[in-house]
Image 1 (spheres, one colour):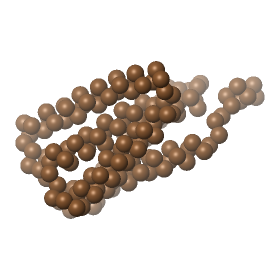
Image 2 (cartoon, rainbow, N blue to C red):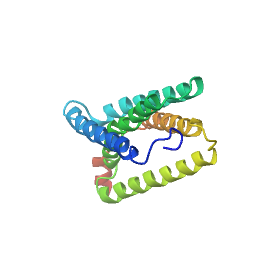
Image 3 (tube, helix red, strand yellow):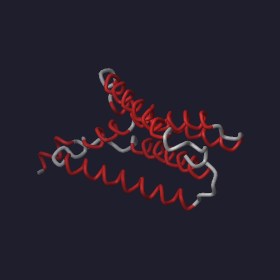
Image 4 (tube, rainbow, N blue to C red):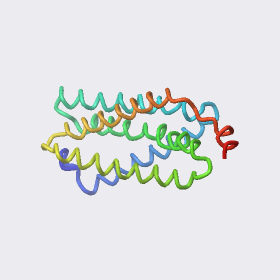
Length: 166
């Protein structure tokens, strides 16, 4: 709002458009789950997010940022979460079949905690430009893609064998 001089009357409309598109893409994700496993959709979302973040950094560094371009790239970044969040939670919960409610609460708490920490870190570098925000977005999305890639190398647990040992 401050950087681009967006009026307090317009901002809720922009935010609402973001929420509306996110909801539509969540429904689209549900349709995709009829054809694909959640684990297959996560890298698509992460790749879109990294691409949007990278484009945003390059655009911000190389050009005088225009609101519409920045808004659309941020929109793409945030809406890619519709292919990431629910699918990642679903995949994570399969590791905790007997305590899925607790595991889901821990995931939610971690999400809010990491978001708060990320906000603090980004604000430490605030310099009146978009650069700290867009670099934070790129670092976060890149680390997420890296963590996902590394986690795919971990063997799947054998839940049946574990239950027999109990």
